[in-house]
Amino acid sequence: MIIDEQADFRSLLMHHITTHWPDAVISAYDPTSAGHLPDEFSGAGNDLILLGSAHGEDRKGVEVLARFVAQKGFPPIVYFGTKDDEKAVRKLLPDAHFMRDRINHDSLIASLSDVLIASNSVASSSATFVGDMRSDLESLIKGYRFMRRLGSTENSGVYLAERESTHQQVVLKVIRQMPELGDSIGTIDRFLQEYETIAGMDHPNIVRIYDLGVSDDHAHIAMEYLSGGDLRRKIEAGIGEQLAVEYLRQIASALSAVHQQGVLHRDLKPGNIMLRGNGSIALIDFGLAKSVKLASAITDKGEIFGTPYYMSPEQGHGNHVDERSDIYSLGVVFYEMLTGEKPYTGDTAMGIIFKHAQAPIPLLPPRLSQYQVIINMTLAKAPDDRLQSAAEVGEWL
Image: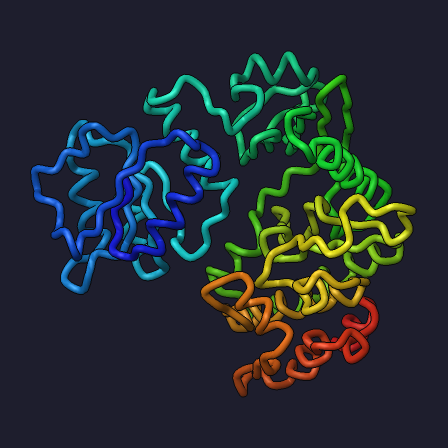
């Protein structure tokens, strides 16, 4: 059951759910037009309650959440809130919690699957190709003790694990080739390319790769576990000016090393920039990386990959990209680190892509004006007007 006053948001959640579970039976409830649910509402008959924060001007979502959580026998609750109610929500402890304007499909499905399994609503999760049973995973990939799942898609999973030989915590990315999926071979190729891209690089700001394994229909990568979380969370908490500059310097250094190997990242964003326990930056997730030197591209020309908030104008329109596209994305990340806001937002992906190509470069607040020149030279619409290499970013700093 989905409860929220905004029809578009209810439709968005329905789309996420039915994309993964086509046979799901979903009821949607608008608390403003249909009236607030009565106090005796028990949620009976539902495996899951997806509760949004929008309930009209006279009631807050956290108030409804508190009432639901207090009821014995109430179905599992997944809450979709805002920054304003985040602290209150954490105290109420719903079964899962998302920011309503930052929903990632794979993370959402993995979380819903975990909640359903924990409540015994399903025996296992179809979101993870090996059923998420620890014994199944450990028999499939020898030498590792699986601790918990970090995320998953239909044919892949990401797990926190421990190497039995060294007791070192690592992140395992596991993928299965599925003949029934038309892009299965291409997915495996991109996965192996990610390993080959990173494994040959010895750079302090690029994630370390420890192991690669391939069997008849599975492949896995063991990589460094980065305990500091991602840059996205750091931005949400607020980053000081000097730290933002230091992060920019480290990210630019990593990009320079990547580009020197003839590789483009193509999906640079805060979620793909992680922090170690010592506070240093590590660039991760080269799943969209593309070698400039490949004789034949893995993806067809004109196909759009990446995240619209961070796409260069040329990438967003499916045109040719080079190192300067990554530099544009780096400028977006720097702007967000400095201000806490994205330079361009919109109601649709295409609307955001249009702004990247047509809207003026945003101005920093006066207190940050000394960095405007770097923003201008990374967010220039035409690649020729940008800084031409990641190394130049460090020089300007």
